[in-house]
Image (cartoon, rainbow, N blue to C red; front, side, top):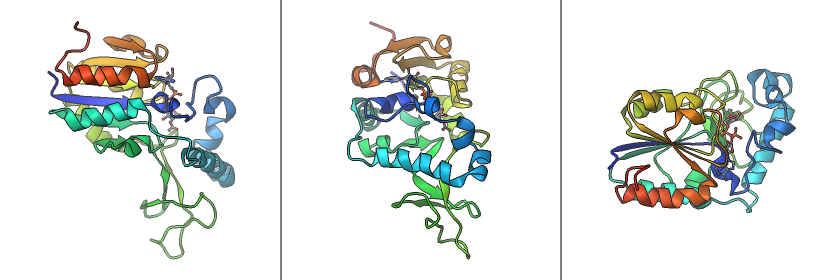
Length: 240
Ligand code: OAD
């Protein structure tokens, strides 16, 4: 029986909900240059281009066609019924974990639904798209809100809490992430180092595949419900 579980999710968990991943075929990074839309320098160069990129993602997310899938729901069941500690760390900026009902959740790469004041760093939930009229209410004169997204070269959120959870977990599961972006790609090493079991759920073996002890290959929405049932039944991953 596990006592502390840490789950890391990536774009793959939202793929079955209709959200684009980054590095799969036709993924976002095939269609856009990272340095243009996901760096502070790109934002300083061309605010409108960056805002258009995130406004398009927001539209997709709020189109009414995107909803949490069986993998998001399985993690909610785990949170509700697991008697130990659980933390879901997501690299995703969508809100599908929240919509499914997850509460013990940390958005390490930020949230599409929010903008941030560049001066006070206060965050605001946005109803309107990013643009010149979308300003903070904390400064005079009001400042144009920037997307509350962690760009390349910036520090992810919640790293102290994440390291603390990784230091104490006895099971670490990575779901739908290619394992190419640090520091998230290194979480499996911390978990291994502290003696946790480590498992990967992915459509294809990810870059850091060999770091995981257990592999579940397939769609997250098909694998997670059973995996969660097994954990709740007190089974140890990898045992029959
Ligand atoms: P990637 O697009 O790099 O990887 C998605 C992974 O999900 C791949 O390994 C796919 O094989 C897998 N996958 C696709 N569909 C799946 C499914 N239905 N079930 C299970 N796995 C599936 O996305 P991330 O690893 O999340 O950062 O990318 C990490 C970070 O890179 C993102 O948070 C983003 C990006 O640059 C920022 O923008 C800061």
